Image 1: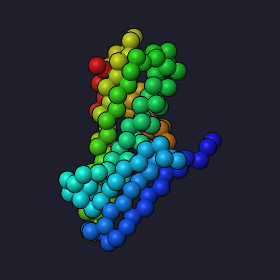
Image 2 (image 1 turned 30 degrees about the vertical axis):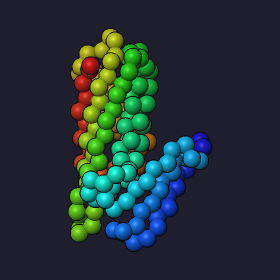
Image 3 (image 1 turned 180 degrees about the vertical axis):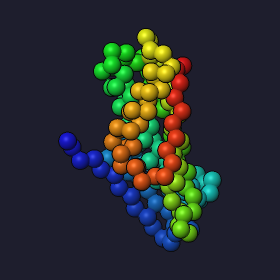
Length: 142
């Protein structure tokens, strides 16, 4: 499998500096700062990028699992929220909340929730984030 890339450059000190983060070979780029990460400033932050990656991975994994089970989805929407908390006096990703909404003909709610739980456990980003103490999943049919 191909190696995927991202890059970032930071200039200045933590609170007064700023940076740019780039996905792939320039597919997407955005500014980030202390304010965009720890306050409500403009720009992105690593936690938003993790949330987007987790949402994308879970949507693909669940769509695949549903199709393999004979109930291909019309759509699967996933939103993810990543929360930083102070743990051992350091900012730490301590919680991720995943919300999944699917439009899947021929499946009931219980089977959809079970498939979403399975996909959450198996998607590569979930596996990479296994050290996060709390990953919550809410799944429902549209």
